[in-house]
Structures are given as C-alpha cells and as structure tokens.
Image (cartoon, rainbow, N blue to C red):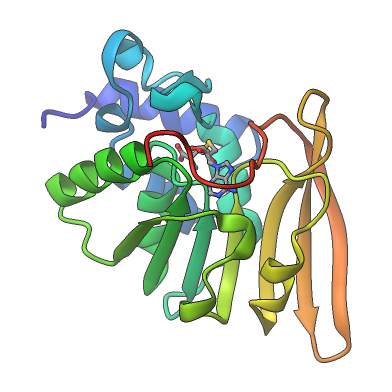
Length: 215
Ligand code: SAH
C-alpha cells in the first residue's frame, strides 16, 4: 500500500486539529493508520477528506474528526481492553488498536467484519479481535472492559453495555432517534455509580437488533 503523500497527510491532520482533535497520542495514531484501504470502490479517492463515506451493507465510515473526538473522549491508556460496537469499515478499531492493549469489535454484518479483518491483517495490526454479533448485548465472554465505544446510535444506553463497563471505566456513545440529530455522550463509571456528560451533536446510523442478512 502506498498511502497518502506528505501534503495530504498534513491537510488531513490540520482538519482534525481545526475540529478539536488536539490529543497528541490520538493525532499520532491517526497519522499512523492510513484511512485509504478502509474505503473501497467509487469513494476511495475521497478517503483523506474529513467526511463520512458509504461502505458496504448500506453503512458508513465515520468522519475522521468525529473518530478523533470520540477516541480523545475515551482517554485510553496503553493497558486498556476496549470494546467497540459497530466495526463498519474497521477504521475506528485500527485507531483504537494503536492506543490500547486489546480491542474487541463486533458488527451485525459478517461481511464487514471479514473485510475489516483483511485490512488489519495487511497493516499488521494483531491486537484486534472481531466478531459478528449483536453488540447491544456487549460481549459478555470478554467483559468487563476499561473502555467501550459505540459507533451506532441507540435511543438509550444499552443496559448490558453499562454492566460490562469496569468501575473506573469510560463509555462513549451516540444517543437519540436515528432520523434526528443525536447527542454524543460520555458515561463514567465509579464506585458510586454512572455519571453522564453530553459532548456534542452527532449523526450516526442506528443501532439495530439482530444480525444483518448476510450473516
Ligand atoms: N466504526 C465504524 C463505523 C460504523 S457504522 C468505522 O470506523 O467505519 C455503524 C456500524 O454499526 C455498522 O457497520 C452497523 O452494521 C453496525 N451496527 C448497527 N447495529 C449494530 C448492533 N446491534 N450490533 C453490532 N453492530 C451494529
């Protein structure tokens, strides 16, 4: 893979910074992971624009600055075990994999999981475990998690995900009606309970029940 040129990378990082992605560790993870291979077909030429793009199964690869802001809000430490719900293209998981010890990611579409796995293999990312599953139930066999990131919008925070967050843990997720503007929220769990704060308006595809037709 050739990757973007130096000037394209500079512009990509500039767009991230100008939209509030300032954490140096997040910026270097995003500099290290080429978004190009995660965008296939007719939209491949637009991989370095700060815009969401269509991927297979009618889904979307998120806008890079939103990926950056969500990753930043998670405050990941190198020893963390992270769960992502909504693998999609696999781009967000690749960024998480640069910052965390291990990343588990699930998607309801088997095809997306398979294609993302190919890209991670080509990139030599070995600390990601991907599975086809309904992520609204989390991943009980690997729980609890230090960090949880949901990249599809639910009307409410799924209870199993709250239960699978460690005390001291952080979860970031979009909440709201699927056809309206949603709110990105951060949930911190401590010994006394769960504490919520609202981060910004966002727009994500809906968190749907069950598996996709291809899987
Ligand atoms: N994080 C992705 C973008 C995800 S788009 C990236 O970096 O490209 C949202 C994804 O959530 C879609 O792929 C969709 O199939 C998935 N999804 C929706 N509901 C789900 C559910 N209940 N369980 C698992 N995945 C789900």
